[in-house]
Image 1 (tube, rainbow, N blue to C red):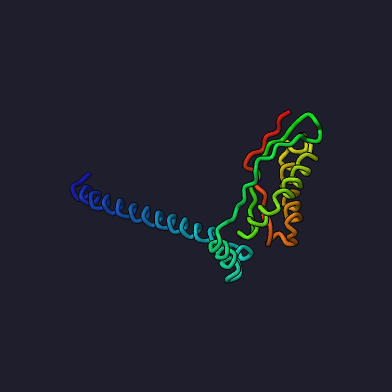
Image 2 (image 1 turned 60 degrees about the horizontal axis):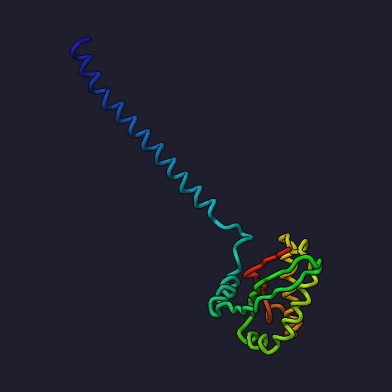
Length: 169
């Protein structure tokens, strides 16, 4: 190898490195740009999921103005219909407004009677499954609104929550 060839090789080596760095930088920019574009495209809500202006805001705003109102009932312990088991449960009610709390307290003998009759009509087998507990919660909700003489769920008991649910055989 002559002196001229060696000098030419030294000049071409940095050029090749420079081209390689430029190509790698261009690939990196394309990959990062693609990832950012994919993120924005995939995180856009579907047209079906986008609420009409003011619709979701109204519901959320209404809930923010009025914190949830809960009423805890006394513990219920009843013999179940199968006569071999008993149920002990703590029930909390989500109410439409604070006015219902006083109405429940005024009618507590009727509330307790209706719930004891309902709870004692169930069997351990029915209440062991999640579907049974869900059905019972729906029945309690309906019973409570009937006792309170509320026709629309949005004005009465909105949800029944079990704080404890023990079946003993």
